[in-house]
Length: 443
Ligand SMILES: Cc1cc2nc3c(=O)[nH]c(=O)nc-3n(C[C@H](O)[C@H](O)[C@H](O)COP(=O)(O)O)c2cc1C
Ligand code: SF4
Image (cartoon, rainbow, N blue to C red; front, top):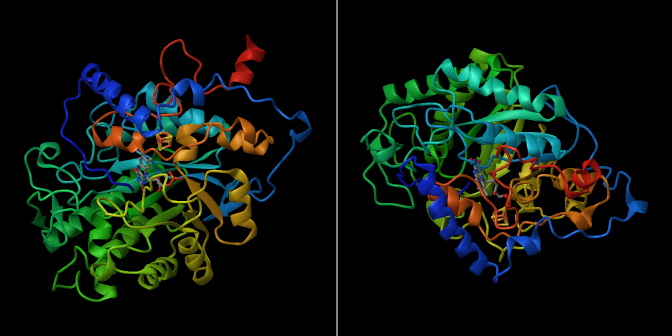
């Protein structure tokens, strides 16, 4: 990610919506006073009927991950939406939010960060959870809701490590590899001992087993963005002198144990992705692409089914993992390409991409196997369907203003500067997520 630094907020949504108005105001300023209306549903560009055909053959050809078929190469990477009730109770709002993206044609969705541990693993009071068997039924609601659209569902299993706050942990200190605070705070942090590491390994495996029982298509282990597993992988946070610190093999140990536990509890055939920051972008303090690729090779050797390539993470000064508009489309495509060159399993990668034509080009160049993007689909849940049908001019483009992530960081539900429906798809009586055209036809 994502530069999530959770704030401790009350759970009163009325209060949240009050604050939402202020964030909306900021975002308007950030994009030069452009209104949601100007970017939103009132724009009705002419549809070129002659182009109503499969416009991008590679983007809309089928693919496979771990024996699971995917109907196309459009892959919605994880994005916190914070639409759960506290305790991981799935709401209609969350179901409708994801359903709109599935209906809009994406081939696969990775959910937001899913909690695997209640003591030290809380990232957001309103995140999805897989910490108890009571959550199996909650996750099943989401799996059942997406299945009719042929959209594959992966849950992203996550522990924040030092990127959280005692207020979310019942007063406990956050934990990490070596007691170092995150890049976003000077919060005191405890060092995990071996017993605690083994217990968290067990939590990841148990959570994966629950996801499998709930009928989801697979899991993604979040090994990136300077969260707990990445905190062990990178010398930036890992200063340990035991078997979990030092050389590459020791720093890999925690992640490898998590992978092995998931495989032991779910079987080696259960589709398993791992998200890896293949470059820390922290100079000499972190690791670089050569080690990032080596991590991916080690995971392939263990039987992981796909790598989701990303970079850097929470608090990274350059904001490379969730870039503002100053970064050009495709600036980090070389990261996915480097992994693809040296591993045989499928590579999902954020380039990043905004236009379908650019996505098609990356596939044609063999730079990745699945086109990872979050904000394309936050900004326009029908991005994929419009691209598929040659309606590119109708796509409501993400302007990389970062309003969505700032809202989540402030304890608000997901929203977008260019999509006023985002996060409200489930509001009673509304038919959000259906295109203007469909709506007009059906009225
Ligand atoms: C609001 C928001 C929340 C995000 N939450 C997560 C998350 O929970 N887990 C994760 O791995 N990445 C998360 N990301 C990062 C995205 O998956 C993606 O890597 C990043 O946004 C860059 O790709 P994009 O420009 O296509 O959005 C989030 C991004 C956004 C915008
Ligand atoms: S998806 Fe996020 S970054 Fe993109 S326009 Fe919407 S609020 Fe801005």
